[in-house]
Length: 294
Image 1 (cartoon, rainbow, N blue to C red):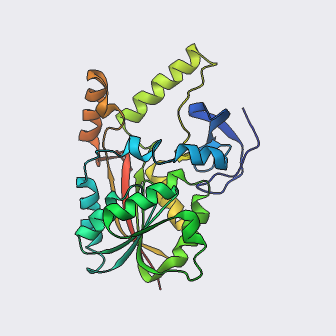
Image 2: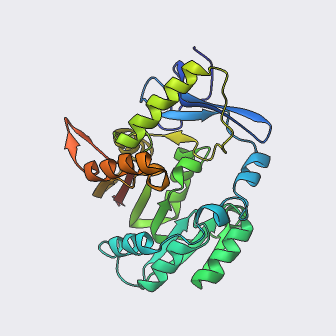
């Protein structure tokens, strides 16, 4: 089915789109469809949620307290230690989309000077208190009379939540010092992985058996990519980036916390994670470190 929708948030194409897995969800009284970009093969949500829907989805009690409460801090520490390979102790790091402050805390522990920005003000206040640093809401950050400059900017599981990821990234690169570091982490939700393949197969079967079925989850991830599209996105936004580090790995999410069969699929996915076949690398997550040319 061809429809006229917004441009693809990954490549900017305005070509015809078709419905794609996971097809559609209804949230906050609105229907959101998942569409396939025929130019770059990414999948994205249309329409963009309105302000009221964003506020409901990302309220601290509804989102951060549910998804990040009790989460192991080991991954945050590993990310902060990776950043130490490219920056000196004491470097300033903007964590855009800091959540409740886990990565800010890890940055402080590794000797960095962190600064947090988060959509929800309550979450930002909590993050700043937890990490012992300044953390503000997106609105408060944008109205600052003087533009703060940083040695590094970090996006951790953030880009996929943004209605205009290219515009936001381009704008924030204006806060990066010459020769500064862009450090990005996030999901690869349509990258080769047994978890993705099984979920897509069962999703297609469900759509055939129950064509009128509409899910009820929050449309928090506004686009889904594989590794190739995600990499191309960064150079599409800023051609003057120099790639220093690129890792694709697998967590088995969300099957790792499911029943016996799902856990078995997740274990297989983890075994394959990071391995390559015919130019494609298996895995559902990435880490990328870039330095912007001066």
